Length: 240
View (tube, one colour):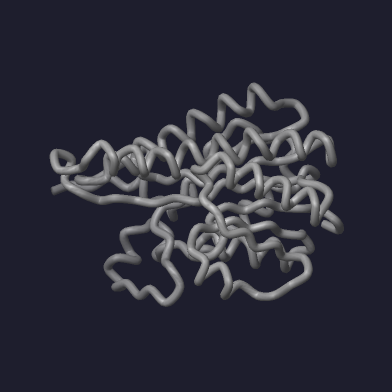
């Protein structure tokens, strides 16, 4: 992947960090934006890794980030929209401000990064891949996560709409992770066995699929799709 550049939002922790390091290790130059400066600074120092402190829901920050990528890497090939926040709270108690903050980061942020990143892809590379990280919470849910679920469902809709608008030169797909363990997180065997494969997921599971979707030779006939990667959890019937 010599000279290919991947943009990753929310790349300083969890799935985003795994994506950033994984793409770097697979020969990509990587540009990361994150609002947590402390975690951003902990990413490895590497000439092929750009670190940008900013908010994906802030249009000015996004414009500066894209300009920073063009100035330093001269091109862009892959966009991975991953940044997200959550606010699990009783629906009747959530404020409008709290609702709008989740939607602004989780959905509007994807819109802004794509809006300003796509022209750089077309200008410098001609073809590219956009990967939107959604969630199984877009298709199943539990109490108190209305804003998060709504934002993730919106991402799936945005994905197939963008696939229509940006094809044929740019493919757009979504990945909907299920239960993905964070670094150092431990769960019980019973919790692992809720999955048909007998285990919860890891960030590496998401990385491998993202690398596949980013590769034009391997996935050039795939666009507009939402790929669920959850160990079969959403296909398991639950009886009470």
